[in-house]
Length: 216
Image 1 (cartoon, rainbow, N blue to C red):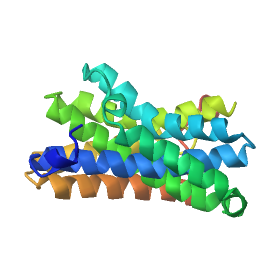
Image 2: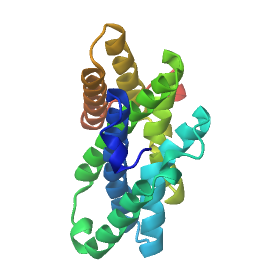
Image 3: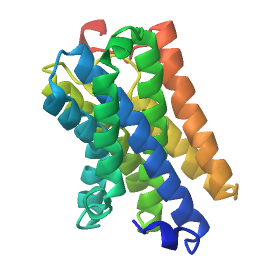
Image 4: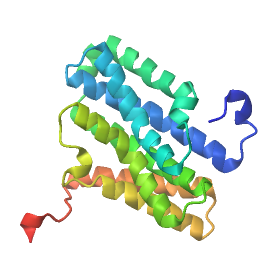
């Protein structure tokens, strides 16, 4: 990703991707660090979990796209955001522990939505077809959270029966569809983020589940 002096020279899609990546990194770093605090990890554990949660999905996406080295490793701002967030959460851990689980779930839904659309945007910038772009959007959204859950010795959210990966896929697909009908990129991205976020929150609130083998 470009440095700050280059930000104003970016094209519209490049600038939108950069902003989405930074926003998603911040949101998921906070969520990952909070999960680490609730898991009683030490400072190093909190930093590792914040880094993996915030940047894991983007690293997987970039590797699959052949965008090497991944943006998270080329631009110092990405790890700096993750590590700074982890340290802040560590020193504010007394307040973090008091944050209710629903608030963490909302934060996770926001990160999922932002990263799913960021992944889709980058895939389209690399001239991927629509199906691959949707898949890479979902991978970007769920990758970091999956690493977080594995490190915390939990079944990843994406493998549970809650609406999670489905929300990322739906948001990415809606963004692609919006672009097909010539909605501007910013508007299409906003639609995708909103749909992914709302689906995830509704799934949690209404306890929506995907069909399971035992239901057949």
